[in-house]
Image 1: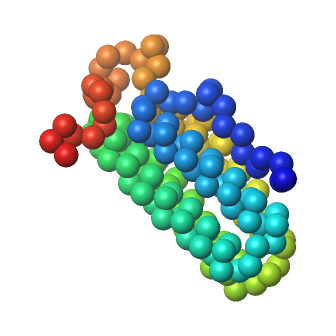
Image 2: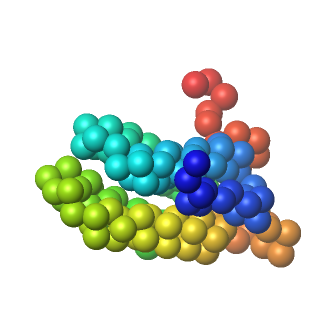
Length: 151
């Protein structure tokens, strides 16, 4: 058994149920990738896992961005740029890893993923939650789910 790559901790919670669920899921997916890489899985399995992560991240970022627009989040442009830049980096790594067996690229990818996801969830994404010290007018709050009721 391989050591857990990313350990979820409740202090990563931001207080928005749908986004917290997706953050936990991303941690699980990144741990699956780590398992595949540690066991030197065949290229197709690694590419499939990376493709799934890229798709999940793109969907997650779209959900976060919808939430930010719906709540008039003042740092939307900056936060979206973080998403766009990171997705581009991960897609580049996925393409490189798909075309080479170079273990250093795998290590770089894991390091980049680990650093970014922890940093982003513990800093930028924390601003999306509802800490008590926020004033009611800081940005429009959404009651309940971030999904419309008529969905």
